[in-house]
Image (cartoon, rainbow, N blue to C red):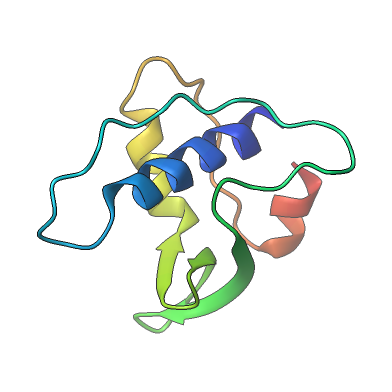
Length: 97
């Protein structure tokens, strides 16, 4: 669950950055969402994609931006505020986390 929250924070930061070339606004802290009406800050899809000939677990934002979860996880682990968690090798491992 903490990994999912960290990924949501990462996705929120990407969404706040906006299109390339524009100065991003200051990212707002992610707030936990609960209850049946909870919606992600940025809608996304999960999938397994072949990137460079290797299957990768990734999220898709705005039906155009593919975010490799292993690379996003590596970026989060550079921040000491996040605990170290191995990136999922496949979709089943992601669901199991």
